[in-house]
Image (tube, rainbow, N blue to C red; front, side, top):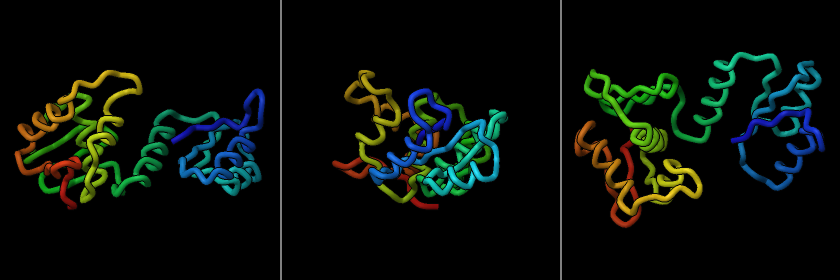
Length: 173
């Protein structure tokens, strides 16, 4: 996902947008700009932007729009994802299981979020590691398994399924 300003120093943001769309990239793009007129918004959206936010703006609105764009990439439709008795709230970064809020580390939360947003689909080990760790960050060979183990202790052993030789999944709601 990208946030693109139209007022760039070397090239107009609309030209950058057109080039990205010309390469048929499915990159979700939010235009964030001082150009607030109706014609500017229509031109930006018609040029391929997924959303448009004019300056000045509130950070809470920007974050909400980014969450919406993120949900479009997944099976989730709201900021709360519920599967069985587990509810993950992406807006407040909380998880409730069996009616009680549970504490998760940042990576445990990100792993659970990735699995729940793609409920019913197998997530490969590589895909999950790329979401949990920054580029160039060294990852221990069993780090993912350790996070899954901790989540299973907190959510129950059957919540996250192992697909041998492929990765992990959470069943569809």
